[in-house]
Length: 254
Image (cartoon, rainbow, N blue to C red):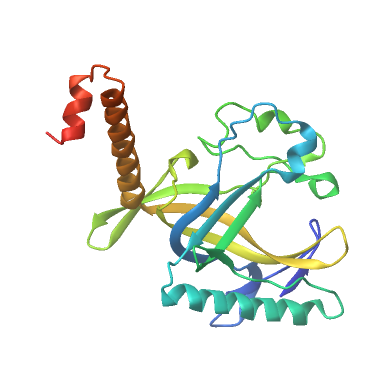
């Protein structure tokens, strides 16, 4: 655990060459797979975003292991990291950390703010948004003095495709393509940041989101579509309106 400034935070780090115990310290990057149970991803739909909202705008994802043992083990590792932060902060106070809950299953949420603001933005340059993150330019309009979009604010959205023989190909993916029920992998860092009140809290900072399998969410979407068609068919029947042949054909499964 090492302390950093701008922004002030304690971060989990590791040596470049762990086996030889040499080199510079780098922030540790973790990865975890799970099923999306909640999401707050770009692009923004509200075009009337005011500059005063910039510090609070974020990208957010929640994943669960649906009760599988690997997620319980991962959460235990988070508790171990929390204990390290408690020791590293010494006399500083840190809020308790708890895993999230989704339909009685434990899960993890990770976030990333779109912007670095205020004194922490001084002397830092903005980088472009990934394609699909800000197609309407809503976020770009918020950039300016004291508001920058840096590498630390950037989340890489990707899709992994199995090309055979255990080889995977990664390609950029628009964040709008992620849905509840998708199996994904998140990459993240873990840090303790200082709150306005002066105490610290442990946060999971989202760095990338990779789609591994969207078959579950696609089936859910199809089931939802067929349910709507079924309701439409019954509504037409009740009110004795003519049913379009294609709708009736889908309903009857012909």
